[in-house]
Structures are given as C-alpha cells and as structure tokens.
Image 1 (cartoon, rainbow, N blue to C red):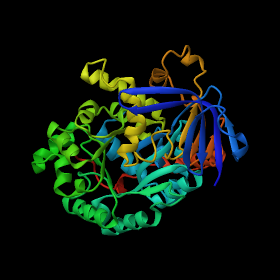
Image 2 (cartoon, rainbow, N blue to C red; image 1 turned 90 degrees about the vertical axis):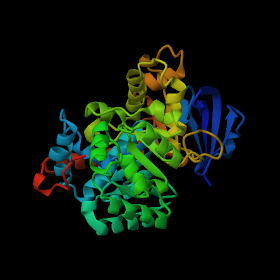
Image 3 (cartoon, rainbow, N blue to C red; image 1 turned 120 degrees about the horizontal axis):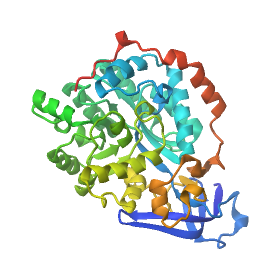
Image 4 (cartoon, helix red, strand yellow; image 1 turned 180 degrees about the vertical axis):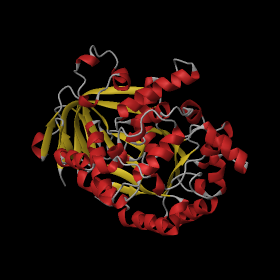
Length: 443
C-alpha cells in the first residue's frame, strides 16, 4: 500500500452548516486511497512514506464535487449564446448533438475533466450519451465520477437496455472511482410508461436515478395544465422517487413539491449560472434546505455555463439566494461551503466517502494557494474561498490518494492532445442538423 504525506498544510474543516474552521500546520497521512490521519506538523515519521508533498502555507480542502454536468458538451462551448430556453434546446442543442460520434464523448469528457481538475473538482455526476467513452476518460484521468447514460422515450427500450448494460459493466470500476446510475432525461421527454420502466429497472439493478425536473415555473404550469400534476408529482406517480433520486435544477418546485422531495429523501443539484444565463428561475435553495433536502452545486453543461469552474458557481449561488430572498444573511459563508463539500457529497449519496478531510475518507484533496494579491489581506478564509477564488489558485489535486495535478501540471491527461482533438473537430461539431432532432422541447 502506497503511503503519502502532505506536509505542513492548513486544513479546512466544515463539520456542519454553521461552522468553518482552519487547522493550521497539519500533516495529512494518506494510506492507499484513504486519509489515515491528520497530525500536527512534525509528528509523522517522514522515513515511512513513499512520497512527501511539501505544502507550507497551502490550504487543504476536500476536492469539489460537481453534482450535475454534461461534461462532453464542452465541445459545443460558445455555440448557443444569447437565446431563450426553447430556442436553446430546439435550434441549437438537439441539432448540435446530432453531430456527436462516440469518439467525441471520450475527448470531450477528457477536456472537461482537465478543466475541472484545474479548478480542484475531483468528482462529477454526469448525464450524457455514449457513456462507456466517458467512463474510459474518467478511468484514464484518475478522477471520480457518477455516470448515467441519458435516455429518452424516443430512444425506445433498446437504448434503455444499453443504459442498463452500462450500469452493470462500469459499477465500482476503476479502483472504485466510477459509480453508475440510470439517467432518464426529464418528465417532458419521457412518457409515464417509460418513467415507470426506468423506475422498475433501477430497482432490479439496485441503483439510483439522475433526472432533470421542474427546470422552471413554466414547466410546472404546463404540467399542471396537461396532467393535473407537477413534474415532481409525475415522478412520484411513476415510481421514480421510490429510488434514490437526484433532481437536477428544481427551479420551478412548489411548496408541496419541496415537502414531497424531502419525504422521499431525494436530493437536488443546483446550477445557478445556467439559470441566470438562460433567464430561467432560481431554485429556492434556502427553502429546500430548510425542509431537509440535500442540495449540491453543479456546472450543468458548458453550453449554458461556458466553464466547468465550480468556484464561479459557488459565489453565484450565494449571491443569487441573497438577491431572491432580499436577505443579505441568506446562505452565509459556512452554509455555502457546507453545500460545496459535505452537502454535495450527500446529494450524490457519498457523504461517508468524500466531502471532508477526516480519517477514513477517500483522499480527494485540493491544495490551494491563497497568497495572490486578490486574497490579501486574508482576514477571513471562508470569505476568500466563496468570493475570491480563481482556478489558478488551485495548485495540486489528489484523487484516491494519487496526485493528478502537481504545481498546476496535469499528470494523467495530455492537454495538447485533448485541445488538438477539439480544434480538429470544431467545424464538424458546429453544424446544426435540425432534421435529425431527438425531439422538440415543449415543456
């Protein structure tokens, strides 16, 4: 078993939504994939380690967790700008995605993982197509992921069976770094019968479900008019909520929906930059958390976010909640950082594995440099993390106890090859093919 020592760092601790602490001058002892101990600097016997990482003055924190993304969509970055939601889907996203070939997903996933690692993001919950290619990219990069193959009613049972085969083939693979989940797209793209099939399949596979739901109030209004049920109630009726369920967005939920989500133990992935860019609604994070619903942060896809940088999402989340509640006290620093760490881990059902730097947790760690001018003077580390952080402040990143980025140099992804592929495919990927749409967005 490999033993690694991170020497003389400061360690961020967010034990609950009310507390942020920094333990200064600590050594982190890592054995294999796990954190074995946190000790005052100098107490560990340096002769007993395979590798020592000097970390004087650096802040160690849990790797960030992206709870909802379509990572390979980085290949379409910048192709759907300044358009409303229906146009974004119908005239850009569906037509653009018809350009995709399997190889694109591998390279797009690799590009997105590289960007996330540079931002200190170590885990992603991804919902896309050709996910065996995405899984291969995660395996090679050394990162952590929860992966689901997106399915629509229009894809029929063949695609659902392919998704199930993916779940079984890749579950707990890549040294346990890859977990799998079923990923029906949304109530408005999946019929009630298809949703019931997904729920039954999730039960037989003993897995959870990751699905878009109540993305805005208009979806909820239309669903009530058509079916007499909100999208969340549609999911309940189909048996989806009987499984561990991650709801992406939930911006249009009603108070009754929030109670329903809480009662079933479902969780919510919150992607506020997408909501603001597409002029959607903002999810009621404070109300969801008050009801006991775990909430995590996500980037969504780079076609609606433009980056995979969770630091940007984190500060937008805090600012947006203050704005919509008209309360400056909404989402204080401790709660915001809790959502980014333990809260996001709980959203994915991984709260006992990641999201904290404690003995027994997996060694997914980001080492941050707060010496930059934009951090000075450092009166309040929590405020620096929420409101000041830049991607370049992330110096070194570990996943499963292995160094994936050292001093800003990625060790497992060839950035030159990734960028070269994206450039070579740019013209083909930018073509829109509306005659081959998956379907029309009409909530």
